[in-house]
Image (cartoon, rainbow, N blue to C red; front, side, top):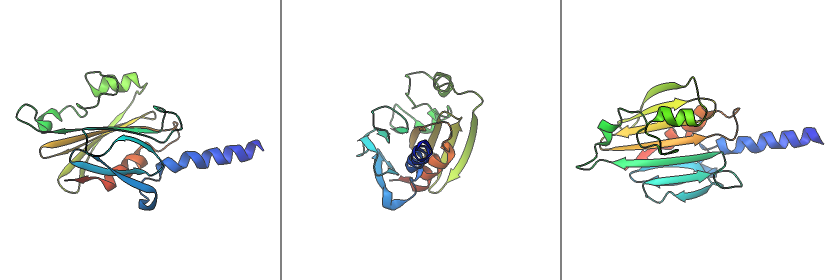
Length: 170
């Protein structure tokens, strides 16, 4: 009986990573950006607001979860210039930089990767076993996405790749 429980648990943990399956995903919008997340997830925001919170957990604010925040350039804010700090809009802990957020989340030994995406979008991705951040930058706009997986065995890059593959800028 214990073995069956473990198999069911493992299968249950894999479901949140199936973002790229359009039949089981829904599109959410954060300012000029949109991307897909699992259809069964709870979403707060996602109708064009500047912030989004989405969770696949049964309890609020428990992993797996996605937090996203967008910036659109104005006369006072230059999103492209501020994107020199890879994650200036991420306010997970109200800290001043992504490095402080990472320390707060217990991440050490993280990796930053820059990826050219379709539509003149550049992604800067930072991850460790406990969390992943992607910053998508395009002319006059930026979208910061934070992903906290259900556990450390989850493939953070697979999840962020699924979001990136469905990303649209309007």
